[in-house]
Length: 231
Image 1 (cartoon, rainbow, N blue to C red):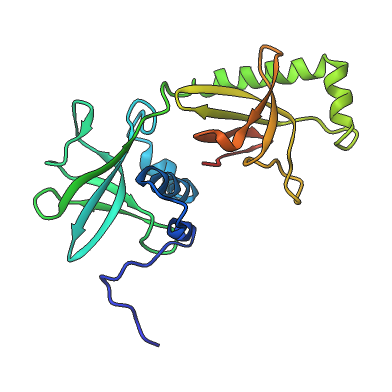
Image 2 (cartoon, one colour):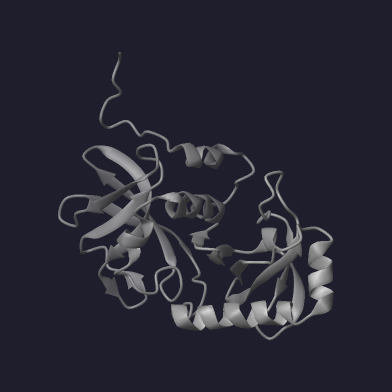
């Protein structure tokens, strides 16, 4: 069995859509890199110490050369100088094209070549602490449970005895919206289609249709005992 040379990039399966000719901008390519990052099992432990990453701290992509190999990566941690990462210090990046699921690598300032590539604006202020999110979730669920109309509309498309339990956050630039999914498009599996149209019930009791496919960030905050970043 022939082995690939160590300095040849292995493409992550999730990064294959980066070859799509419709992805014409570096910003679109970075969004795809973020999709791969959020699928990685170490994403939260790796980003935990960088408070505000993706929010007050914008996502930044760099080009690098290490041990004769060139690539691009999303900056995960390091020192900052003002509003930018300090590339005169060591940084950690995530390269979605290395390995099967992407790889975290440390770039040494005194050894590796690093230069800025693309920066995407952050999503604004970070989410509230979990107790606040749980309270919002409970308020939205209470609004549903006290509305005969909401329950009747739910039963038209869902089994009797069930209730909505998917509480999500959508970002449209710096505009953040959190609510309980009470209607919308579904996948053949029965799961909500987060590339379609959904109706959110806000903690205030106000309902609003959402074009989720147009959101810059989609995160499932609570879905039973599950939570996950969609993109």
